[in-house]
Length: 432
Ligand SMILES: O=P(O)(O)OC[C@@]1(O)O[C@H](CO)[C@@H](O)[C@@H]1O
Ligand SMILES: [Mn+2]
Image (tube, rainbow, N blue to C red; front, side, top):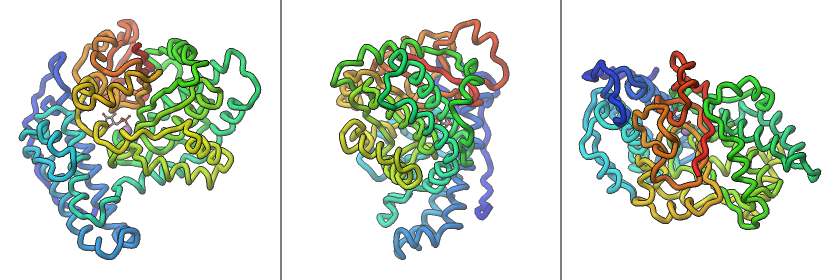
């Protein structure tokens, strides 16, 4: 590695379990939060520093000669950020951006290993943005863009396999049961697409190269709570209503985004809904999360590589059947808040989502925010943990953090090892 500043890790975390009901935090050594902050996050920063050294000339070519000095300072500020984390320094205020005050009211001098994990992990990505924003010439620079693009390209075989299935699903022929079977398959493909995040893998590229529909049967018993039937009933109730809108709060770019778009294509093509509204992140986030730019280049890439599909998807955008909601350019999704705070912090977004036909929340981080990232008993009622969130909602999430609710005692009893964080298990949970 090109950057060798060896910070000494200041380890004062406690060797005892996280108390029941408390926010997850790296204060407790046995927690996944501790592993993440101690090991995974420094690796993610180191990878960016390496990228800045290695690809300096490419970045200068793209953003202009004046960025040469800015890249040097960025390497310095990212290395400093890693050092602050590894030596458990206080979280310093965010300096630039309309959301700085909101952020600073949450940060308030807490430290990396003592503060809530959700706050600290979100803060890391917000600080990266703050560092980048210091250099106006790099304001559009996405430190994870390379990884996201190569992950997308590497998933081409799986995308083509999925496209072949999708073409059969969206023909003009009527489908038995209004397409229930196909709805189930595409929703599950979108669920398992969430395995492909690059935060859990410490920034390692994740992609998919097998036929995703053929893998579904083997994964069936790994769905620990499955409200698919209820989700279908919910969608059918919207069916026939020409203004039926559903929202998808996206998670990762790359293969996961492709699966989400396949699902959204099916919904509008079979006229199960009239409009799908997407919500993306307004800055590079948790390595692989989709930004508006990621959506734009993904559609362009598909027009070049799978033209029939790419053009059809472009037409959904032009006709307004697919909408990228303005929340994708504002800050709520990149604040550290639990979604129970949405009503207070962003009432317009809360009202919009509460009047949606269904809000689909993709992925692990969204799930953590839905349930407040607390150390819940896994048997807790879904409705209790989701109190205050906009509904009706459907969470599609593979388990990659040690928090889950709404499971049956008999299911929990069968689980062993690191089932909560391995990404091998999933939930499909509807709360009406
Ligand atoms: O939200 P995603 O993309 O499904 O997952 C992001 C994620 O892997 O990042 C954290 C580890 O850094 C985990 O808690 C979380 O699961
Ligand atoms: Mn993600």
